Image (cartoon, rainbow, N blue to C red; front, side, top):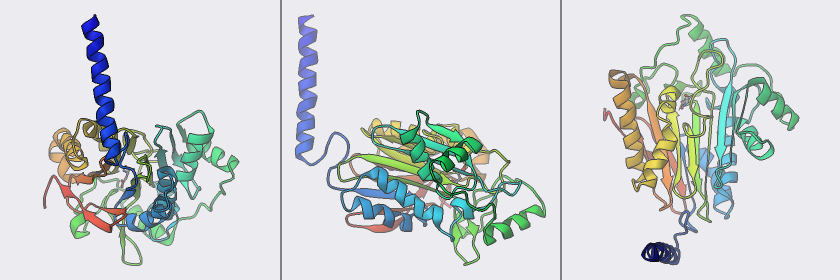
Length: 343
Ligand code: ASP
């Protein structure tokens, strides 16, 4: 018994020693102090990161950064996230979002209609209710009670055109994706906008602030022309987003059904906890999805994007064409992710 007690004491003191040494090097128990960074999915992430950096660069909290960052994308007229996005197959735009902070507080909304900033409503769910997720008319009712305005139930001109085109056949086809050549079609392929740009229907953002604390956000209109009531991975904590302040954070994009079945973002964070880098952890979970989907993996796109407490960032996708935006003290760039199928 005495020997055992001594062992435990020595081990605890040993770990405290390691912790003290790490702190001396600038690394806290959580993340690296004084080296804030933010990453977000797809090209629209560059603009979103700018807004996040306004907060992070001044020493602000990661939670505020990831909320304000993706709000830029939600509000953008040139983007498929938010109310300008493609509708469901009945012609209604329905939005999903979630947010998570360094204390593992989290909030989410799903199947939300006519509210411009679902991410801000998700944060209110987190901060003002005893719940994690509100959906549909309940989520809208809560948003209105919180003072969010009810927006018009109209489609953007791009979405109107896309919907009219889709109605000609009214098929919900599994997506055949060739995002690299911008030739994709199907619910998760990039949409061509009237200004000639291509865009996606989701933004996921994860950040570490100057205190070494992590937060993340994810917001989407989901799959274009989906069944009414369909909710994907994006508002589901552990699937579209997961944050663990001792490890790091991960977000997902692509075919939500296949992210949910492997508890995607949570699984990536758990592998990082075991010591894998963000890219290696993302790769393992992509490989798991490919094993499950077999031949069908050729027809779907999924990507994970993660950061860890050492300040590393990385991503991995099933198909080429996924890139993410990075902003830190030194860089503001778009990074092309590696993929399971190289071409
Ligand atoms: N993951 C989103 C969903 O399934 C879509 C996307 O990322 O493009 O709703």
